Length: 119
View 1 (spheres, rainbow, N blue to C red):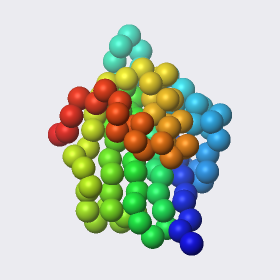
View 2: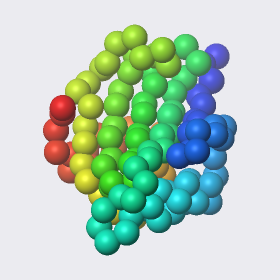
View 3: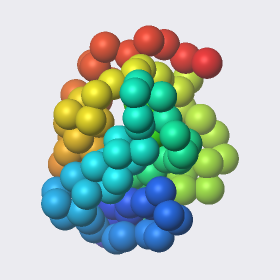
């Protein structure tokens, strides 16, 4: 049977398996606190990955500059991109919603967000 997994990689590089909503919120708060006067003082990013042991993987990265990025891969080794990466600039609340959808495996809802397009 295929097992699903979710891993958060915080801005400090630490991985958290199966993060709670509170852990996601704390990681985002840490990122968005790096912004002063509309500019990132200390650029960083955190990544939430969701996938299956024997297949697909989805990646939602949030940077301290407010950029949100969503990627779809054939596997956890990133061998084949299944779509052009999607991007947008978003608030902390939008980043939280993106990660919440990832955590709940709502990929189709993520695809329907107002993305700016690919590279």
